[in-house]
Structures are given as structure tokens and as C-alpha cells.
Length: 338
Image (cartoon, rainbow, N blue to C red):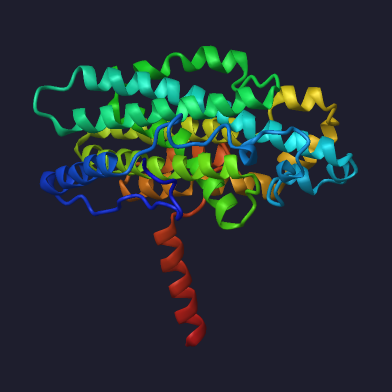
């Protein structure tokens, strides 16, 4: 039985110079999926008394970087209400995660269905689909144990999202942007939570570490696929991808990181408190930071044109790519030295 990961996994990052190096990455990801994987009902001790989910457990209180937790309204609530709101947030993130991964699995299988014999991506896609199945089971089991009426995605958005599994039939590149749009923001928050020591409950910590370890592979494949494919796209399709990417990311990051409407209504959170917490400059910066890796990747691939950059800004998720910021900082330091 594999043990839960004790350290945060890092994605495989290599420069894709040619097809051989791209195939090498897939080989390593395939091997990693065989050597280190977890099963939802074999590797999580659900019935351990330490893993019991009690909605009034103070370990569910919101972490400092959740802006709602900083408000006077939240801090004035009784301890059990603070815990219940924190648990609702965790459970909603897991419910949305399993709904997204449901769409992802169907899209991956649509992609794999059309792959010719002998393509190494086929095996990797089935490894990822298997891992996502276990993620969905562990997320839903957690939600069930909260005994809270957790809904996940808003109903209207859930209906629109049913188109996502068909994206690979139109553009595999756009599909893997969608994959990163769902995985990167959650990965960003989970890593920040663990590194900051904000996760107090052992069940949440175990689920989160397993998810991070396997999602590192999924994120790595999507990034390397885009590095391999995007440079070969024709100019028109590249421009379309450049404009569509910030739309997908802007919507998905907010779904993942914004407060769920049912929670706001259930606890009677005043509208001005919600605005204070989640529409502040700091909260918007957090959303922008959560898609920073994808933004830098798109800039590296040369698909962020003038129009696309305006769309990034319109969704409030633009920042200068890391490499450009580093060059600018270096030039500024050099100028100051003179």
C-alpha cells in the first residue's frame, strides 16, 4: 500500500526541444503513475477516529489568506459558525473539483478515442483518467461526511460546462488550456495552504497531499503538450487560442476561488461583507496569482498578442510575465548602480 506523500510534489519541467524530449517526458510521467499512486478507499483511513469530520471542529476555521476570515463579521461569529463556514468552503472546493474532473475525464477519453495505435499519449491519458477517478471518489466521500448541502458549481454554469468534454474534437490545445484552468488555481491554493501550515485536520491534509502529488503529473503533461503543439499551430488558430485562453482562465479561477452562493445564503453573510472579502484589490490579486504559471507559459509560447493582453486585463488576471519582470528588475538595478 503506497504511503501518503510527505512532501509537496513538483511537476516535471523540461525544455521541449524536439519530439524525442517530449516523448521522454511522457515516459517518465507514465513510470511515475505506476510507481507512485493512491487509491481512494485503500490509502485513506476513513474510519480512523482521528479522521472523523465534525462540522464544529475548530480546525475548520478559515485560514488567514481567505479574505472572509479577515472580516469583522466572520470574527464576530460564534466558534462553531466559524468552523462550519470553513468546512463549507473546503467541501465546496472538493465538490467543484470532482465536477471539473468529471468533465476532464470525459474530455480526456474523447481525446484518447481518436489517437492512432502506438501513440504514447494514450497510455498516459488512461493513467490520468484512473487517478482522476480516485480523486473524484475521495472528494465525494469527504463531502458526504460533512452532511452539508454542498452543491458545487452554479447550476447555470454546470449546464454550460457540459460542452467542455467536446473541446478536444475542435482543438486539443484549447482543451489542455481548460485542463490547466481548472487544475492550476486549486493547486496554487492547496500548496499555499500546506506550506503555510494552515491545514489542521488530518483527513483534509491527507486528501490534499495525494491530490497535489498526482496533479503535479497532470499539470506537467498539459504544459508539455502545449509546448509541443502550440508552436506548430497556424497563425489564425494561435490568435484564437491567445484570445480564448484568458476568457477560460478568468471564468474558471473565479469559480474555484470565489465564495459559493449557497454558503452566503445559508449563513446570511451580508453582501457588503462578501464585497469587502472577495472583491477587494488583495482578493483580485490572489485570483491573478493563481493563474500566473499559465500566463507565463502563454507568453513564452508567443500567443499573448495586443488583443489577447486586453482580454487578460479585462478579466483582471494580467501581470507581466515572470521573465519580463526579471529583465525589468535587472535593468532597474543596473540603472540605479550607475
